[in-house]
Length: 436
Image 1 (cartoon, one colour):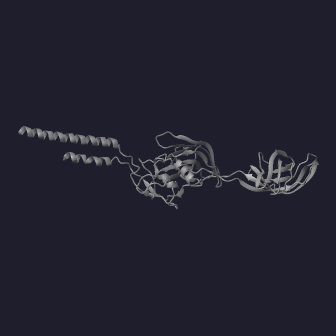
Image 2 (tube, one colour; image 1 turned 45 degrees about the horizontal axis):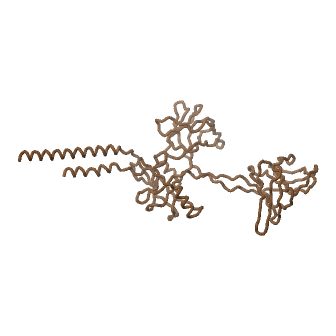
Image 3 (cartoon, rainbow, N blue to C red; image 1 turned 120 degrees about the vertical axis):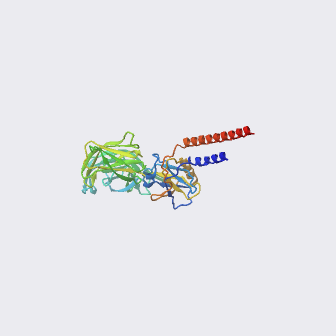
């Protein structure tokens, strides 16, 4: 009976080896409750409650507390818009088959053409139609010109492109650029785009070997890249005795990739940026040296770029003492957690644990297969979490005891008790035999 009571302790001891839970949890909401997969953009609160430097203690669990297939992805990359097209003003030049032209123009204060007069100055070979294009209103250099001719026009010819900044001195950008517009039945072949390798305020286009009524000239400007919105967090520093360095402690695991220094008043200073994740470890160089300036409210330097870092402790160093303590502003782009709708809904996002770790699933392969099944435009449904979340386990960040050692001690104690019990039983039997 004693042995059975002792063995009953083992399940209780084994409970001590169970893993800790999660610190915080958030209900996941979405407008699409029947989606196959979801994507969550992580907010500042999730980063703040995470503990693992690689963010492996952020996961998705189902209604029964079991993890579902999930994977962390970097922030959305900047997206490229379609090339911007801007119509240009153009002027038909008089037909001069045996002469080149000198142009007298009237322009406004911005250089845009108001009026053009031409006069012949010397003879040259015969050319076709010619046009003057005003490029001066463009904010940036154009990549190409798109020419639009009358739909009924059919031709295959060459286009000479010349450039000028003053309408007097000209240079050749393209001697012979192939251009054509052909139609046969319902089939149509069109090549009226001219790539521009140089830059000029004005262009002179001359169609060689053909005639065609021009209807429009459109500049093709470089595609603009749209970068997802960046989040920023500002921190107050602690100066050293000489006021040559300032230390900061951040409260999150964001992938910081931009740094800005907020200087009081009008200040110019050279900075070096360092970081570390443990106060006992040496500082690691992250950025600099760079000049940071603040001249009034409007004139100030831009943020510096750095490789993404998730460390807790940061330090700014300067080359001269600063009387006022600068503020450190760190920027990041939120990452995305994508998970598959497996298990039993509703789902919860969990974060912060000393022992729990997300096992990244091959989500990229799953998404590729889903696109093959549902079409190239298929995307995971948008989901979100909000607020600070609920406390799931307040002890989740506590480092657990050495459970293996505890279990070994428990087994040893049980073994000693069992051996002691057997010894007492043997002694009782031996004494009974002696009295018999």
